[in-house]
Length: 459
Image (cartoon, rainbow, N blue to C red; front, side, top):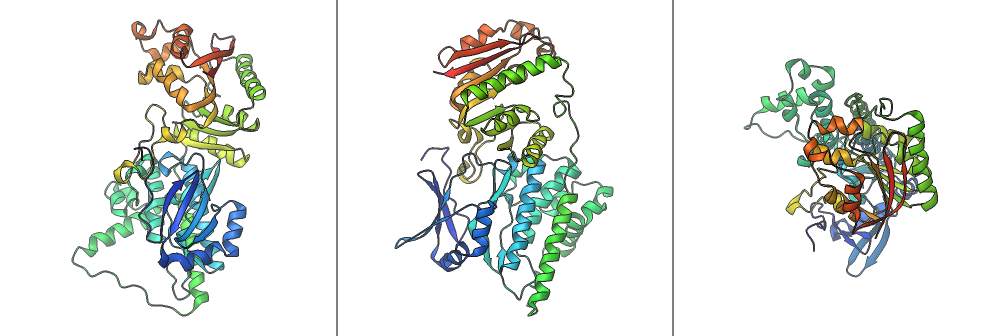
């Protein structure tokens, strides 16, 4: 097994997960067999599958044990690679399924963003074992604490403390209220947004002390209708709090990139758009990776041309715009908020529970687009052209679009910051030298501003 191969899951006492022949195989432990079979055969689960809200399953019941076979999602993503609006979509799906489960006699016992994957802009719950039979004598949502730690508090750290959501990579089970309380100013501790989910539990924790006895569980209540009412009120309250916890999206230079364009005339911008559209029309790629997608103009174009698109964008507000646009217009675009120059590493036990970003992307795409991106990577990250083209070679199965920005371009000059001796001699010939053993030129077009559009085919 290679270092990049994800480990079979081992944390869930009800079963384990592994990958075989392009499928995801969930092995059900004997103690969970009866309830798992009841759930996957239920009308409730069948309805969620048909809606696409839960991963589909094929039952394989053998003498060796019960297995559920799920289709493999081509490019899985993790919460630390999501824009805040993706967090909200995942949270809303979690709460919606929990609410619907109550009416069907099922309780969602796990509520973590790690159980959600995105298929394009659609969140999907992939952990079939997250549901158990509802206890009608209980009014407590057992996943409440986990939802608070892994959904609500990370959003609040972003809103109140401006901690990036990427830090959730290091907080598998989320934040504790005391973590945030100690970091908040006095005024924020007692703000309406923070008091109930952060300050009150943190003060109770401080007051309790290490020597106190654990809180006794609430006594059973035989009034099933009242218990359902309380559970629904709990979920509704969490939904409201989650919306209030959403961080504000402030415009940045890059999130309003199109509106701030000074290095393109309208005609030049249209010429670029038309050229990319002609490539998509002529070659009809089924899968496209848009690196440095900005607010998603060309991701949208590729999706409307019939491709499944992955939009990779490092700026959080821009990534959120891509997701919101793709979701509202039902475009087949998967948004990944990540930096190509500092891609997500492998994390978890033995660095293999959650795989690195690059292995998840390699060899997945018929076309890779790098539109006005390479000069940023070269100048800001000091990555050599040859290394960039090596990576492109691994990412694409066939085609590569590069928008080459010459050294005389205002954006290149601005980013060069006086390092003319290092980068002032870069030319399109430097690009061709880096491509020599990897790509052949298929077509090109010089735009009116001197930028050059290249289409390469992999050798």
